[in-house]
Image (cartoon, rainbow, N blue to C red; front, side, top):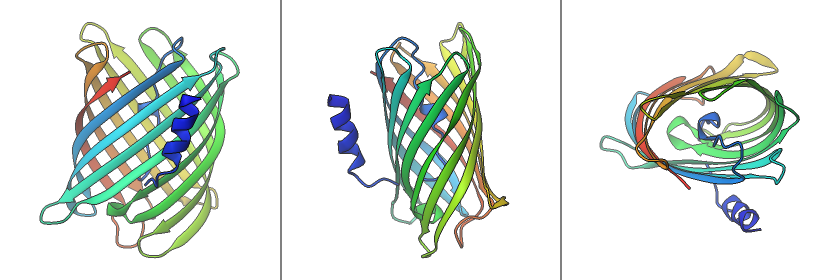
Length: 250
């Protein structure tokens, strides 16, 4: 009941971002029913010809059922970005996802997400979707997952444009533990075309390297590339960022 109360509490605050890498925030724990993680990082990004310094905080909560076949994943994120001689601009998102395991290979997921990102012209973007998730490979050191989901999207830009569309979200995610140095490499790529027009698509590629200082505390470095073939008016179609930060599991 405490987790349910927390979910409703967080859902009541307004949330806001662009295409979000959910895979990098999942907590891989086969036998642990309840897990959480807090992350903080800062990055230098090239967004719409602006050199931004971005400060990011993220909270992850994951709750599994007694039989370990179902779980809820909650992500809450907030960002502050600052360009030289300009004020801070805000971004955040809230993501809630349900996952059911049918067997060793197949899972089914459903999610909802509310986001915004003023630096890239997104006043509000609402997503909801569902689809299969496949576990392609899993052993002590390597995990490979792929998914293909349907998404309903509503978007309002800072320029006043309102759109509703139907998108596909296809992704592949790879994670590998590096033995001997207590490190993990996580790489994820998303492709999200509009069903009505494949030329309207988004691509996100993110690679992150985590170094575990202790069992719970880690230092993380990541590179992120985002491309939007049809961004909001006046916004460049690609952003690049390098992030440095830390995480704490609980």
